[in-house]
Amino acid sequence: MLLSALSCTPTDEEITTDPKAVLRFSADTVLFDTVFVTQGSVTKRLKVYNPNNKAVRISNIALAGATSSPYSLTINGLQAPVVNNLELRGKDSLNILVKVNVNPSDVNLPFLVADSIVFDTNGKRQNVKLVAYGQNAHFIRKSTIGSTTWTNDKPYVLLDTLLVKENSTLTIEKGALIYAVNNAVLLVNGRLIVNGTPEERVMFSGYRREPAYATAPGQWEGIRIVTKSESNIIRYADIRNAVYGLRIGNPGKAGTLVEGCAIQYTFRDGIIGFTSDIKVINTLIQNCGQYSFAGLGGGNYEVLYSTIVNYNNPLPRETPAFAVADYIPGTDIENQATRLRLINTIIYSDSYSFKDEVLFAGNAATLTIEAAHNLLRTEQYKEALSGSGNIFNINPAFKETAKRDFSLEASSPARTAAVPLPDVSADIKGTNRNASTPDIGAFEYKE
Image (cartoon, rainbow, N blue to C red; front, top):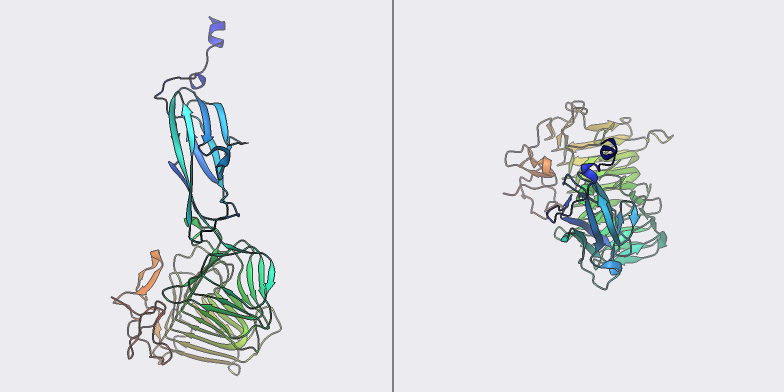
């Protein structure tokens, strides 16, 4: 009896041949968002469960496309397109790691790459679909370029530092898509012209296409305007997921125009200028880790009809959203002539940490501030900025901040509170501004 007891097989190791003893999976489809050809993909995990009390013998786990499949499998640590006679104990599970590599194609538009993983257990076949959207791209490796035009035929993927050299112009056409990998940066020592439109915006964002990364900051370095650069024009571009959106340091050079843009989810600054000239019109700057907009160490700054906000921001900010100073902290640069023109702009947040989202720092002799018809979150400057049509510390009444919709409700205090500016006739979406009583912020109210 003792020998018999010792020789008994535990239930979870006893193999069943019942055809009803099927497997379960963590997903019926493993989906890869856009995968750029030749670059491979991230790894996806599929979990395979045996919900039965007894063990099962999986006679076959294989890619339906076998060795010609663009997918590769790692099954319980073994990389192979097929594994035979794998035993899975009762109530146990195994992991399958899936990757895809898409072969180059002449197709410019996204294309579908599909396969499946097949499981044969006790004469019953089950499968899990594998689906990836592949797309060709222009891959930009570390390089220096002269005058060049990027079209919207297929995306551009920055794999490293790209420098636009002095006296050269990088022109980016409307509808172009630019994706950047970790540490990639666009350096402009010449000129950058971005010709987006309200209908066909230009996109700069991180390389990862999964939904979880859509609002994740710090996925690439950003756009940096350096010393010899001048006369840059960036219209209707979305700049996302960077360490900084625009970092501008070209003292004494013709300025940078940013119009109709959305700069979002940056790990540090949205737009930061050092002793530079910057004009921002009809622009949304949202959820930055430090300054949303800053002009430091002198320069000329105009911010018109813009919306600068921090709502549901997961980053632990230690600076106000908006700052202008006649010095650069931590340097010997100070007491530089600094001019700010802040008109028809919303600067606000839901943060209890910052009752003042505005900072003006410097000497009266060097710092000139014109601020009118703004909606500001500030206690410090209420008295100094009163009497110029400014509104203080009243909820702007955005439509739906949880969904990142910063257009205005009909009841918003920003409605009809702006002053008309002759050179600005439409908003960030191309909606016409009211000619006599426009709205504060980047978005003109639209029913």
